[in-house]
Length: 424
Image (cartoon, rainbow, N blue to C red):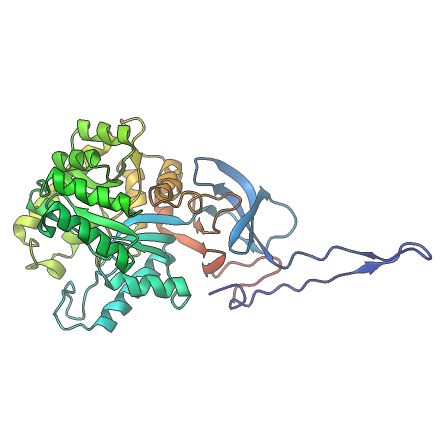
């Protein structure tokens, strides 16, 4: 959806004035018909700065100016809090619940078209929740949705995808390097690596140091980032030694592993509680599939306390780059903001710091730090506004009233009306 489709059109008028008899006519400057002015009472810019009563001038899909409010605004968001578009560095776009109320598995009857439609629906739900960029560490089904969004065929967040993953069964270091090259050829944006078992299986290390060296080394050689699923401390340390870009989960990591990540500049992506609660609240969607059984659910329940204990330790590590990722699976897409709320209410983090984590720092982790994650001149016009102030009301992270991605408005509240424009 773009501003023309919304019926928002501005007509510029030029006015020639003659001053005095015989004076040369002076052409008055016509209003800028290409700019869109977004006004908000509070702007949290993605770097920790907070400003009041600001205009964000958008032109050509980018931020052209950030200035104190003046004159008329095209989009007046009133007392809403404006921030950069949110980024989730860890989702599973292709996971969904079938009509039989079960997690979709390959070979269970749903065809490729049905899978793609569900993935597209998941993408749209996340965009409406304020997530303008997501990183899907999923399968090949992500590719069609990513490409359709890029072409403008579908509305959705910017999608980066791994198109699959590597694990200990991928084989020898040479086999792993070959697999990385195949992913690159197929169009992967990032390489996903399973270096440990699931927390439901104890989270023990499953890949050797040599395998991780090959996976992350070849990823770097191919110009790709590497994201490592690692619960065990040993797996996280092996990932750091291998030069991997990011470590996910880390439920069982120790202080040494956290210090190693900080020193190496490895990004760390823990979750708060959305993914665990989703499994526990909807057991019958998953029960009987792999390790989704009573023992596995009990391990998931125990992991909640481990996640909470981990927070105090990682927040104490100076220089550790903690990005935002939810591991959103079937049933959790569009609920991503609940982990932002969780990080304030359960972890005691400040809303401003969390916005930085979920915007500029997450963009940096994806190699997009000069394009996304900030309300600053030259950056993509990805904007989200909350109905409420998350600094005093953490639930506001789950009340998104306005979403713009690349200068196009995808969500606006019914009450929205600027002096010049009306929301249809």
